[in-house]
Length: 408
Image 1 (cartoon, rainbow, N blue to C red):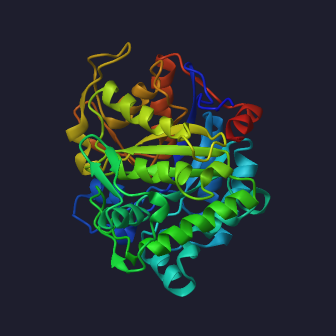
Image 2: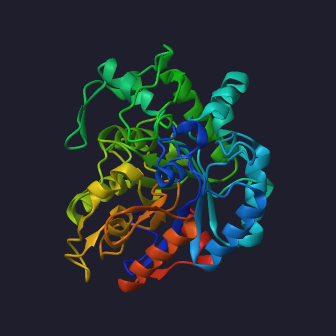
């Protein structure tokens, strides 16, 4: 049997993606510091949330060659992340009208007061219910339902003695057969070491059993819709292991969907630091892509994997990540994290399919002196486009090619 482990794009092309909104840069997740620039960035003041604003931005992004847009729906009145399927459906309609052919992705974070209230009222599924929306009725091409809170499953496996990690290397060792694992129902406050805004790391209380049930529900929902799945990696070891588990060890896992997009969020946590070199970057991408290879004696259905990369660096950490680029025609040039990410993704053999920029990850730009300035999604896209052009990278924009990219 031939397994589709080859990346969907070529070395000289990328899909340019935008994470427009996100969950952490919101008014309720930030305590004002008195620094007007920093407060505007961290509270998400510049993130478009009204339907007119979203419509204008979608059109602008489409005109700039963006082929993938990742959305966390925002309440237009409060600017906080919302579970409202009506808002998600409106976004989908706008995307189809203003960015025809572009791939749409929905997030599923547990962060924020309105998400917490929806979970209290309607249960855990409320935060990922968008995974069950048909594409023509407000749904998305990809839906992310494994990011941070789901790592409670892995922490539970560690406590029960099923797996042990070397967090420096991002590797793991299995200690007990995973088919014997039964998720704990003990509800605990989620505690993860992440780089975030004041309230952006507050995921509330949950259990491994609840998160496992939610993952299974979303996989079932995506299968019923013949939809693609998506995960975000926020730690080297645990996130890679959980994705590997879903693909290769979980009974009736994501291999039945045939299609997975893995987004690596460099800088999201101390255990997934932003790489200082292209070699560090490439090693993480290679580890993620290896998940496509089935394990001996396990589920051998082919799994088409694409890799998306994002620079999840907070504005107050930005200056710490300015350093010389070590590859390509701009080698030796001092660059910030988003710019270095674009250059790494543009290298031959990078293994990357989607370069993700946007205000969910790095809602700022750096001037030549290293000063942090507010930015818009279109400004970030413009910077990324210029760097990709400098490296002779073509953008995948043809709707037929994008649909082929999405398909299993």
